[in-house]
Image 1 (cartoon, helix red, strand yellow):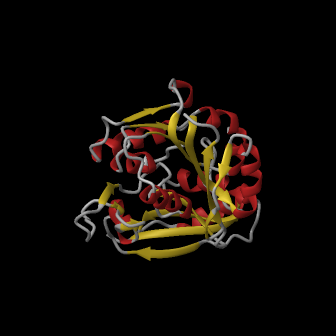
Image 2 (cartoon, one colour):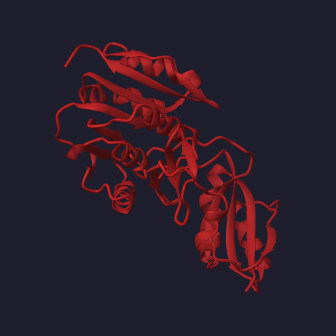
Length: 294
């Protein structure tokens, strides 16, 4: 049957009130969308990602009467200037609509990320099977793509690797597929750990991956640390991440805006020599070699 989609544009601090109104009206789903084409960084674990202005979108049965809901929104937001937009949607399998926009992608020469039911055209490809989920990381974001391309160009064959802030596990799984003999996937978000374990099993690399919270990490330094998080956490974690890299090992960091690169490098420069930064859109990837020899 068709559905009724109702949406309203609000400020960030109004989002919770509107969501509560929609949920109280028994919306089948409520989602938040950017209303102004505003860049959104990956949120820190436990934080809700929101833009400055956003659209709250709710799905109802087609025969729902929206007039009473309009009044509830005016009351909740203490404003008569609430524009509630309505759109009729034809029925479809909403659980798989992501397939319309997410397809097999190549990173570098032979590394591919493929959703269910798709295969790369290259028979020699190294394939990470992954569908969009609750945890961050499918390869569509520039920072994840930068890391995947770096791994393709620098396969960690027979190396020990830590993926710090693993999200969906995409980088940890790619490292395992490219020959790492042990990969430790670290995140403070329990949902990320669940997603990583599930994705590792799906890609038949669970025996290589160790998935854990940061406080559970109990290991000596490794050959490679990858951290696709954000600039401020990278700066705060400088001593921790440095301690995880062997002398002569490497650290790869992104989630960094171009104007933040100098600040991040300054936090690590006492321990690492950095290569020329790699830039995509407004983001950069930093690669550092640990000073000293093994």
